[in-house]
Image (cartoon, rainbow, N blue to C red; front, side, top):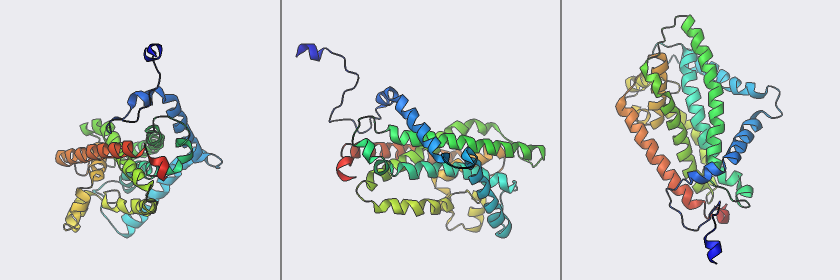
Length: 287
Protein backbone atom coordinates (compact mmCIF):
# COMPACT_ATOMS: atom_id res chain seq x y z
CA UNK A 1 0.00 0.00 0.00
CA UNK A 2 2.85 2.39 0.84
CA UNK A 3 4.46 1.69 -2.52
CA UNK A 4 1.27 2.78 -4.29
CA UNK A 5 1.02 5.88 -2.16
CA UNK A 6 4.53 6.93 -3.14
CA UNK A 7 3.93 6.63 -6.89
CA UNK A 8 3.51 9.71 -9.06
CA UNK A 9 0.33 9.66 -11.15
CA UNK A 10 -0.09 11.54 -14.42
CA UNK A 11 -3.83 12.02 -13.89
CA UNK A 12 -5.82 12.10 -10.68
CA UNK A 13 -9.60 11.96 -10.97
CA UNK A 14 -11.47 13.03 -7.86
CA UNK A 15 -15.16 13.49 -7.09
CA UNK A 16 -14.79 16.92 -5.51
CA UNK A 17 -13.41 19.87 -7.43
CA UNK A 18 -13.37 23.60 -6.93
CA UNK A 19 -16.12 25.10 -9.09
CA UNK A 20 -13.76 27.88 -10.18
CA UNK A 21 -10.99 25.45 -11.10
CA UNK A 22 -10.41 25.61 -14.86
CA UNK A 23 -8.07 22.59 -14.71
CA UNK A 24 -5.61 24.47 -16.90
CA UNK A 25 -2.86 22.01 -15.99
CA UNK A 26 -4.97 19.17 -17.39
CA UNK A 27 -5.85 21.24 -20.44
CA UNK A 28 -2.13 21.77 -21.12
CA UNK A 29 -1.52 18.04 -20.65
CA UNK A 30 -4.18 17.35 -23.31
CA UNK A 31 -3.05 20.15 -25.62
CA UNK A 32 -2.58 17.68 -28.51
CA UNK A 33 -6.26 16.76 -28.26
CA UNK A 34 -7.17 20.44 -28.18
CA UNK A 35 -5.22 21.07 -31.39
CA UNK A 36 -6.84 18.04 -33.04
CA UNK A 37 -10.32 19.31 -32.16
CA UNK A 38 -9.46 22.78 -33.47
CA UNK A 39 -8.24 21.22 -36.72
CA UNK A 40 -11.40 19.08 -36.92
CA UNK A 41 -13.70 22.09 -36.49
CA UNK A 42 -11.75 24.17 -38.99
CA UNK A 43 -11.44 21.48 -41.67
CA UNK A 44 -15.04 20.26 -41.34
CA UNK A 45 -16.29 23.73 -42.24
CA UNK A 46 -15.12 23.55 -45.86
CA UNK A 47 -14.61 19.81 -46.36
CA UNK A 48 -16.33 18.51 -49.52
CA UNK A 49 -17.13 22.05 -50.70
CA UNK A 50 -16.22 23.51 -54.08
CA UNK A 51 -14.87 26.84 -52.85
CA UNK A 52 -13.20 25.48 -49.72
CA UNK A 53 -11.72 28.11 -47.36
CA UNK A 54 -12.95 30.86 -49.72
CA UNK A 55 -16.30 30.52 -47.91
CA UNK A 56 -14.70 32.35 -44.99
CA UNK A 57 -14.51 35.39 -47.30
CA UNK A 58 -17.82 34.86 -49.10
CA UNK A 59 -20.01 35.13 -46.00
CA UNK A 60 -18.83 38.58 -44.81
CA UNK A 61 -18.68 39.94 -48.38
CA UNK A 62 -22.31 39.01 -49.05
CA UNK A 63 -23.29 40.35 -45.64
CA UNK A 64 -21.70 43.77 -46.11
CA UNK A 65 -23.16 44.07 -49.61
CA UNK A 66 -26.62 43.36 -48.18
CA UNK A 67 -26.14 45.80 -45.29
CA UNK A 68 -24.84 48.50 -47.63
CA UNK A 69 -27.83 48.12 -49.93
CA UNK A 70 -30.57 47.80 -47.32
CA UNK A 71 -29.41 49.77 -44.28
CA UNK A 72 -26.97 52.16 -45.93
CA UNK A 73 -28.73 53.05 -49.19
CA UNK A 74 -32.44 52.20 -48.79
CA UNK A 75 -32.83 52.99 -45.09
CA UNK A 76 -30.23 55.76 -45.22
CA UNK A 77 -28.79 55.06 -41.75
CA UNK A 78 -25.71 57.29 -41.19
CA UNK A 79 -22.38 55.59 -40.49
CA UNK A 80 -20.39 58.49 -38.97
CA UNK A 81 -19.09 59.52 -42.39
CA UNK A 82 -17.17 56.29 -42.85
CA UNK A 83 -17.15 54.12 -45.99
CA UNK A 84 -20.21 51.89 -45.61
CA UNK A 85 -18.54 48.56 -46.54
CA UNK A 86 -15.71 49.20 -44.08
CA UNK A 87 -18.10 50.28 -41.33
CA UNK A 88 -20.31 47.19 -41.70
CA UNK A 89 -17.39 44.78 -42.07
CA UNK A 90 -15.79 46.02 -38.84
CA UNK A 91 -18.95 45.25 -36.89
CA UNK A 92 -19.74 42.05 -38.76
CA UNK A 93 -16.46 40.21 -38.10
CA UNK A 94 -16.63 41.03 -34.38
CA UNK A 95 -20.27 39.93 -34.17
CA UNK A 96 -19.69 36.75 -36.18
CA UNK A 97 -16.92 35.67 -33.83
CA UNK A 98 -19.15 36.19 -30.79
CA UNK A 99 -22.19 34.52 -32.36
CA UNK A 100 -20.23 31.46 -33.54
CA UNK A 101 -18.61 30.98 -30.13
CA UNK A 102 -21.95 31.34 -28.36
CA UNK A 103 -24.09 29.10 -30.56
CA UNK A 104 -21.57 26.27 -30.88
CA UNK A 105 -20.56 26.30 -27.22
CA UNK A 106 -24.22 26.32 -26.14
CA UNK A 107 -24.71 22.82 -27.60
CA UNK A 108 -21.29 21.36 -26.80
CA UNK A 109 -22.65 18.74 -24.35
CA UNK A 110 -25.40 17.61 -26.68
CA UNK A 111 -23.24 17.54 -29.82
CA UNK A 112 -20.43 15.55 -28.17
CA UNK A 113 -22.40 13.38 -25.74
CA UNK A 114 -21.11 10.15 -27.29
CA UNK A 115 -17.47 11.17 -26.89
CA UNK A 116 -17.83 12.81 -23.48
CA UNK A 117 -19.60 9.79 -22.02
CA UNK A 118 -16.85 7.32 -22.95
CA UNK A 119 -13.45 8.97 -22.60
CA UNK A 120 -11.95 11.13 -19.88
CA UNK A 121 -10.34 14.44 -20.76
CA UNK A 122 -10.79 17.95 -19.36
CA UNK A 123 -14.29 18.93 -20.51
CA UNK A 124 -13.18 22.54 -20.90
CA UNK A 125 -11.22 21.44 -23.97
CA UNK A 126 -14.44 21.18 -25.99
CA UNK A 127 -15.59 24.82 -25.62
CA UNK A 128 -11.98 26.02 -25.85
CA UNK A 129 -11.56 24.23 -29.18
CA UNK A 130 -14.64 26.05 -30.46
CA UNK A 131 -13.26 29.43 -29.39
CA UNK A 132 -9.86 28.73 -30.98
CA UNK A 133 -11.22 27.32 -34.24
CA UNK A 134 -13.49 30.35 -34.61
CA UNK A 135 -10.50 32.56 -33.84
CA UNK A 136 -8.89 31.19 -37.01
CA UNK A 137 -12.04 32.09 -38.92
CA UNK A 138 -11.97 35.55 -37.34
CA UNK A 139 -8.34 35.93 -38.43
CA UNK A 140 -9.23 35.10 -42.03
CA UNK A 141 -12.08 37.61 -42.03
CA UNK A 142 -9.89 40.21 -40.33
CA UNK A 143 -7.46 39.76 -43.23
CA UNK A 144 -10.32 40.66 -45.56
CA UNK A 145 -10.94 43.75 -43.43
CA UNK A 146 -7.26 44.75 -43.67
CA UNK A 147 -7.33 44.39 -47.47
CA UNK A 148 -10.43 46.59 -47.71
CA UNK A 149 -8.89 48.95 -45.16
CA UNK A 150 -5.74 49.43 -47.27
CA UNK A 151 -7.86 50.09 -50.39
CA UNK A 152 -9.72 52.90 -48.63
CA UNK A 153 -6.48 54.29 -47.22
CA UNK A 154 -5.20 54.77 -50.78
CA UNK A 155 -8.53 56.35 -51.70
CA UNK A 156 -8.02 58.89 -48.89
CA UNK A 157 -11.41 58.07 -47.36
CA UNK A 158 -10.62 59.92 -44.14
CA UNK A 159 -9.88 56.90 -41.97
CA UNK A 160 -7.09 57.26 -39.44
CA UNK A 161 -5.94 54.65 -36.93
CA UNK A 162 -4.94 55.86 -33.48
CA UNK A 163 -3.23 54.69 -30.29
CA UNK A 164 -6.34 52.78 -29.19
CA UNK A 165 -5.39 50.13 -31.75
CA UNK A 166 -3.24 48.71 -28.94
CA UNK A 167 -6.50 47.58 -27.31
CA UNK A 168 -7.26 45.14 -30.15
CA UNK A 169 -5.86 42.04 -28.35
CA UNK A 170 -7.98 42.90 -25.30
CA UNK A 171 -11.08 43.36 -27.47
CA UNK A 172 -10.60 39.94 -29.07
CA UNK A 173 -10.11 38.28 -25.68
CA UNK A 174 -13.23 40.03 -24.35
CA UNK A 175 -15.49 39.00 -27.24
CA UNK A 176 -14.20 35.43 -27.01
CA UNK A 177 -14.76 35.37 -23.24
CA UNK A 178 -18.32 36.68 -23.67
CA UNK A 179 -19.18 34.00 -26.20
CA UNK A 180 -17.48 31.31 -24.12
CA UNK A 181 -19.10 32.35 -20.84
CA UNK A 182 -22.63 32.70 -22.20
CA UNK A 183 -22.21 29.50 -24.22
CA UNK A 184 -21.16 27.51 -21.14
CA UNK A 185 -24.14 28.83 -19.18
CA UNK A 186 -26.58 27.88 -21.93
CA UNK A 187 -24.90 24.50 -22.56
CA UNK A 188 -25.46 23.59 -18.92
CA UNK A 189 -29.16 24.37 -19.17
CA UNK A 190 -29.71 22.67 -22.55
CA UNK A 191 -28.59 19.32 -21.12
CA UNK A 192 -31.93 19.24 -19.30
CA UNK A 193 -34.10 21.66 -21.28
CA UNK A 194 -33.58 21.13 -25.02
CA UNK A 195 -36.03 23.93 -25.90
CA UNK A 196 -33.41 26.52 -25.04
CA UNK A 197 -31.35 25.44 -28.05
CA UNK A 198 -34.20 26.55 -30.35
CA UNK A 199 -34.42 29.89 -28.54
CA UNK A 200 -30.69 30.45 -29.05
CA UNK A 201 -30.89 29.59 -32.76
CA UNK A 202 -33.30 32.42 -33.57
CA UNK A 203 -32.51 34.66 -30.60
CA UNK A 204 -28.84 35.29 -31.41
CA UNK A 205 -29.54 36.93 -34.82
CA UNK A 206 -32.13 39.17 -33.15
CA UNK A 207 -29.62 40.10 -30.44
CA UNK A 208 -27.43 41.64 -33.14
CA UNK A 209 -29.90 44.52 -33.46
CA UNK A 210 -29.19 45.54 -29.86
CA UNK A 211 -25.56 46.17 -30.83
CA UNK A 212 -23.93 48.68 -33.17
CA UNK A 213 -23.21 46.30 -36.04
CA UNK A 214 -25.46 48.13 -38.55
CA UNK A 215 -25.61 51.59 -36.97
CA UNK A 216 -23.30 53.71 -34.79
CA UNK A 217 -24.10 54.40 -31.15
CA UNK A 218 -24.52 58.11 -31.91
CA UNK A 219 -27.44 57.35 -34.25
CA UNK A 220 -29.18 55.20 -31.63
CA UNK A 221 -28.81 57.95 -29.00
CA UNK A 222 -29.98 60.69 -31.38
CA UNK A 223 -32.96 58.96 -33.03
CA UNK A 224 -34.13 56.57 -30.34
CA UNK A 225 -33.13 58.04 -26.97
CA UNK A 226 -35.83 56.07 -25.11
CA UNK A 227 -34.37 52.73 -26.27
CA UNK A 228 -30.71 53.60 -26.80
CA UNK A 229 -29.82 52.33 -23.32
CA UNK A 230 -30.46 48.78 -24.60
CA UNK A 231 -27.70 49.29 -27.14
CA UNK A 232 -25.41 51.36 -24.94
CA UNK A 233 -25.32 48.88 -22.06
CA UNK A 234 -24.96 45.82 -24.24
CA UNK A 235 -21.37 44.75 -23.41
CA UNK A 236 -20.71 43.93 -27.07
CA UNK A 237 -21.42 47.53 -28.10
CA UNK A 238 -18.35 48.95 -26.36
CA UNK A 239 -16.17 46.30 -28.02
CA UNK A 240 -17.47 47.05 -31.53
CA UNK A 241 -17.33 50.82 -31.04
CA UNK A 242 -13.76 50.66 -29.71
CA UNK A 243 -12.73 48.36 -32.57
CA UNK A 244 -14.06 50.85 -35.13
CA UNK A 245 -12.72 53.91 -33.35
CA UNK A 246 -9.21 52.48 -32.97
CA UNK A 247 -8.86 51.54 -36.64
CA UNK A 248 -11.08 54.05 -38.43
CA UNK A 249 -10.68 57.10 -36.20
CA UNK A 250 -14.41 57.89 -36.09
CA UNK A 251 -17.24 56.82 -33.85
CA UNK A 252 -17.46 56.82 -30.08
CA UNK A 253 -15.12 55.63 -27.37
CA UNK A 254 -15.67 55.69 -23.62
CA UNK A 255 -13.45 54.34 -20.89
CA UNK A 256 -16.57 54.03 -18.72
CA UNK A 257 -18.32 51.80 -21.26
CA UNK A 258 -15.16 49.77 -21.80
CA UNK A 259 -14.78 49.29 -18.07
CA UNK A 260 -18.44 48.31 -17.77
CA UNK A 261 -18.08 45.83 -20.65
CA UNK A 262 -14.94 44.32 -19.09
CA UNK A 263 -16.65 43.86 -15.71
CA UNK A 264 -19.72 42.21 -17.29
CA UNK A 265 -17.44 39.96 -19.35
CA UNK A 266 -15.53 38.79 -16.26
CA UNK A 267 -18.78 38.16 -14.35
CA UNK A 268 -20.26 36.14 -17.22
CA UNK A 269 -17.07 34.11 -17.66
CA UNK A 270 -16.83 33.30 -13.94
CA UNK A 271 -20.51 32.40 -13.80
CA UNK A 272 -20.19 30.22 -16.89
CA UNK A 273 -17.15 28.47 -15.42
CA UNK A 274 -18.93 27.69 -12.14
CA UNK A 275 -22.06 26.35 -13.87
CA UNK A 276 -20.05 24.39 -16.44
CA UNK A 277 -17.89 22.73 -13.76
CA UNK A 278 -20.97 21.86 -11.75
CA UNK A 279 -22.91 20.34 -14.64
CA UNK A 280 -20.04 18.45 -16.28
CA UNK A 281 -20.04 15.95 -13.41
CA UNK A 282 -23.63 14.84 -14.01
CA UNK A 283 -24.45 15.84 -17.60
CA UNK A 284 -24.23 12.23 -18.84
CA UNK A 285 -27.29 11.40 -16.72
CA UNK A 286 -29.43 14.11 -18.34
CA UNK A 287 -28.10 14.67 -21.88
